[in-house]
Amino acid sequence: MPYTRRKLLAGFGLASLHMWVMSGLRKAEAFSPREPSAAEKGACPFRLAVINDEITQDFERACQIVARDFGLHWIELRSMWNKNITDLSAKQIEDARKLLSEYKLQVTDIASPLFKTDWPGAPRSSQSETRDQFHANVDPAAQDKLLEHCISLAHTFQTDRIRCFDFWRLDDPKAYRQAINAKLQRAAERCAKDDLILLLENEMSCNTATGEESAAVLQAVPNRNFMLNWDPGNAAAIGDTPYPAGYQLLPKDRIGHCHCKDVVRKSDHKYDWAPVGGGVVDWVGQLQALQRDGFRYALSLETHWRGAGTPEASTRTSMDGLRKTLTKAGISC
Image 1 (cartoon, helix red, strand yellow):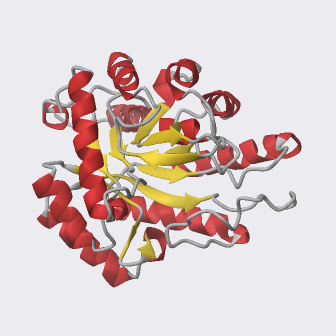
Image 2 (tube, rainbow, N blue to C red):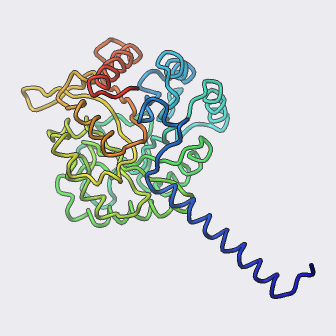
């Protein structure tokens, strides 16, 4: 049948419409919570993971433990070989990719130090030189360049998530909060161009630490690809009650990642880390709530506690505590 000009134009129009619809569906899938496939879900409702450098700086050893000893399929990348992930050479990145493939591990997110620095023009934070940077020391003026590098790393390691912070904690951030939120929104908009999700971690040494502060930032930055890396341990460390009080304030569909660690409070109003299940965080209630509210993303062990003597031994103890806590919560993982 001969094709007329009208038929050809109609065909092109339908093809363009199909491409536009499929593009929109891909972006909606990237930015919206979705039910995982049967292969993704397995027996556990969460993507149970460990931050690699909580175990060791030897990345192959970390992969061995996560995949073989813990039997997991997910790992979170922060630093390895005594380098932050954002400082790895091209060869080290390729070596890491090969190890991930060998041990059949998928990457939950790039746990970058993005925006973990002083806010330009504000008084210098008391936190800026006292916190562990995990082998990162990023120039405040280089954050946009760092974001571009993190986007490249996310593609390289085949993850759709990048972790960030919102600058070292100020005694009174009110005068700077609107500008900080605008910076986060621009970063989220940049990530959206690559179908990536930007995860803000609540961190006790940064300007968003508690559930209440997290909810306020999520409201101020409404982009669907701007989500929360919820860390109940960090909230507890600053004196907040993460569950149920803090968690109840959060928009549940904006939680895109969860760090798992525990805290004990001391008489001097300070804190120490603890193995999961051995501190003040109501992890049984928190895990049950996450499951009930449809959270299906990474639950990533960030031990921090070193009471077993070595990072590896302490992570093993804390993983055992996490598994026992999951069992108490009635969750099979």
